[in-house]
Amino acid sequence: MRRGIVVDAGESSVMGARARMIRRRRGLSLAVVAGLVGITKQYLSQLELGQRGFSRRGLIEDLATALGCSVADLTGQPYLPPDRASAEASATLLDIGIVLSDVTLDDVPDVPARPIGQLARLIDAANDHRDQAQYAVAGRELATLLTELHVHVVTGDAETRQKALATLVEGCCVASGIAKNLGQPTIAVLAGRRGYDAAQRLGDPALIGFSAFGRSLALMRQGRHDRATRLLTASIDALAGQADPTAPDPSAAEAYGRLHLGAAVNAARAHRAADARDHLREADAIARRTGERNTLRLHFGPTNVAIWSVTVAADLEEGPVAYDRVTAHTINVDALGSVNRVATLHIDLARALGQAQGTRDADAIRHLDRADRIAPVLTRNDPWARELVVVLSRRARRRVWELDSLCNRFGIGRPGSARG
Image (cartoon, rainbow, N blue to C red; front, side, top):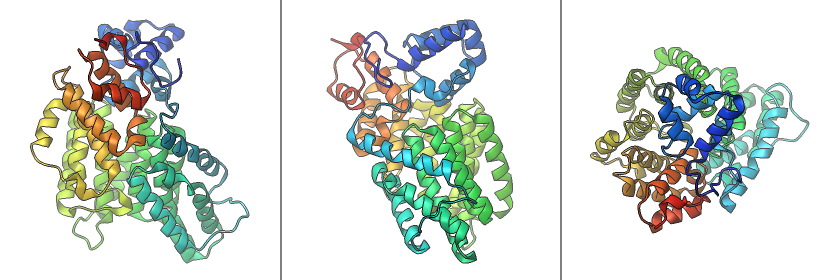
């Protein structure tokens, strides 16, 4: 079997098949692993056999911990590129990873660096491309830009160093976001840590908060919830006294709200439902006072909090109820001007409906199709979107063109059980 692509019609869930293989190689019983994950032995067996899908992110992360493997071992990321755009985007990450490994905030190569103002404009443009899910364009020159920013941090005068550090935070945010969405969590963590270190050296509370948020998302993607919890908790505590949503520059409040959103998702994936809701409520209260903001193109405000509420609900396996609640009040996602956020919302809406055990699969297919048409690279490289396509295909009682098309676009073989 090629990594990331279903080719055996009898294996309707590749993640489950990988989990079964790893469990057996570890010499672990169903009962032991199920106990560690906190589910029944029957549930684990159904996951392994592809009779149930991984409907929430936290489940596969818990399973990876119980099996003593990485999340990527189960998801199969990074996938073989399903299209040319994915291949081009993934190719940019090799040089980015090399730069983050070889260049530091104290040791840089002897190379020329363009003026800091020019680099700042190029990083802003790259961030805009990331926000529009144009990852190949965003990453095309990013390794060179990151290198030159490091050069200014080490060799520039005081003013130049300050500007270079601030721009480096944004550049690392771009790199981490691309790597995370393309299934390269190690590079995402490296970029997240470098941006956080740059923000700490700069001493800007808002940038420290924003970079901590991005770093925590990368840690979560690796299944490192405890590490993410410590980072988020410390960062929230540090910003609490400075998060004034009525200040002339409310960026610290934006960062504080983003940290609460990150903490909500992290808590949901760790089965702490009450904590997740508390963090979501705090983020919502802040967003109502800041209004729609977009520092570093991170889109904090009531609209994005509503989007994140769907993510949290899906991770808590409360998807169908959340779907009805959220869609009853129109979310004007177009106001964000972010393809990335709109596609992510449709993926999470599809995940939410997929938890209705087959009764709302047609709408789930519709949302997945919408996500893929507006942001194919993001959607086709999302492990939970891919898993949902497999689950929907397995459950289908008749051939549906839209679903067959999704399988083809994702490079996922249609399970034989869905034929007819």
